[in-house]
Length: 327
Image 1 (spheres, one colour):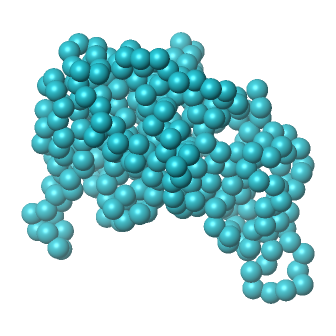
Image 2 (image 1 turned 135 degrees about the horizontal axis):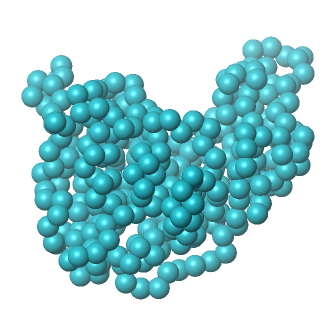
Image 3 (image 1 turned 45 degrees about the vertical axis):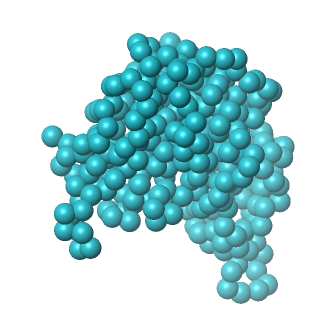
């Protein structure tokens, strides 16, 4: 059995703040625990939403918006249940890192996890076997962390089950980020997304900025999106706040541009700019000598620049750019 134990009831009416307690013996705490904050707000029979943040520990819009929700949402405002885990990957979040400092694992490549595995695997197993089965709809917040920067978008995936895909796309539209993306994952094995969708749930994810920080605008998008999604799921009463959302598609691998040398990256277009097939979106200059011509990073399709590398130095094999196609 998974050793994680909740310190609060997961199925009782009212509002309960507590922890998912994972025993973790280590050098500085022989009988210590990893304490993952969780809030459950419930009011009678109805749908359940699972809202998660900090799947990667250096992404902040989700934790901020979900902490605000934990402090403000009252049981009488909802019908059903909202399970909120603002810092799902607490060890990585505490370290301000993408991956866990305890076992080096990337949580979003570790699902479905193992009950007898590493710390990250145990957390993944508990979420996959206890929390996700309880949910009707799941929202997992992401942004670019320290190494990427994105246009603010909500996303849903193309799925084999077209009825499920349609439900996910409708939930994405309800979130109503400035951009809405039919998303192609380049590496979906072990992702939380894949686990949730494999259980037949409605799933929405986001990329709301990045560069290792959050802005007033990106947090406002996250907060509005949460309310809209809960209204869409018939959990929260009220009218959705809707504005124009640019529709984008990622039809195939041509959308992605990767660096084929290391060096100093110079972007020639900014996020949101129109890009033509074959256009140079960035140049990579040598970082250790002068007089060398830069390597060019070329767009593989026409669209708009939707994501880019964040630090000024880039390594061979790093992601350099995403060109998404306007629908």
